[in-house]
Amino acid sequence: MQILGVDIGGSGIKGAIVDTVTGELVSGRHRIQTPQPATPEAVAAVLAELVLHFDWTGLVGCGFPAAIQHGVARTAANISQLFIGTPIDKLFSEATKCPCFCLNDADAAGLAEMQFGEGVDQSGVVLLITIGTGLGSVFFTDGKLLPNTELGHLYLKNGKKAEHYASDAVRDAEGLSWKSWGNRFNSYLTMMEVLFWPDLIILGGGASKKFDKFKGQITVKAPVKPAAFLNQAGIVGAALYARSKKT
Ligand code: BGC
Image 1 (cartoon, helix red, strand yellow):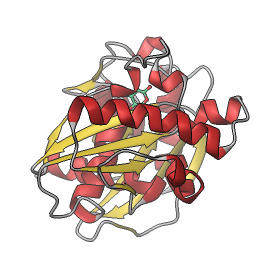
Image 2: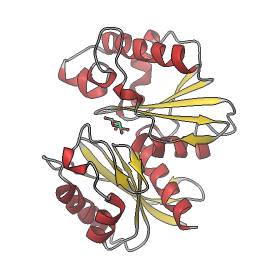
Image 3: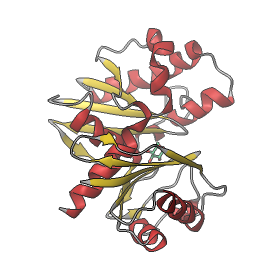
């Protein structure tokens, strides 16, 4: 079954048509800049533009950078605060005239990795962290998703919120070398390990493509692997989620 998977992020809104049986992209990826301010109406309009680009009329799955409960956004860190309480499944479905199903973006990336990527057949506790504008998190225990964990908002020992200290956007904004950013990110992973003791840590989001540049800084005991889908895990997982809602 083919589904349009979309990853809505703080800086870009990216989509592609996904074959949900194989997890492969069956179209090119199309990216549109996230509108600023990223209000519900502005984001819905860009999503409609993306749907039009693919001439799409079927199901749409959207990874969204917030806690999503039953189709309603509950938080808003790197998007407009106006999203809080917005029924985004409904808003996006109306704007695109396609049935849209939204979930947290890190949860989406996790679904793709567990089904087709580094998490296949992995039992125990898997933690996936997405490194982008913010830090996203998702846990699986014996393959079962724990949604909306929001662990990029934990405070580190230095008193800073993790995603304000160790996200890819911070690395970029502060012009940090991969080594010095890698040390920051390692302090975050160390905290995750001390609190949750994952058996495997998978890294997604933009920075996962650059794993080779910072893997030398990582000292946690759990194996750490870049997502097999790298930055595309969110698109694939969003499509998988829409399929699960429809069947
Ligand atoms: C949001 C999360 C999201 C993460 C990655 C955080 O700011 O609160 O919901 O998963 O960014 O986009």
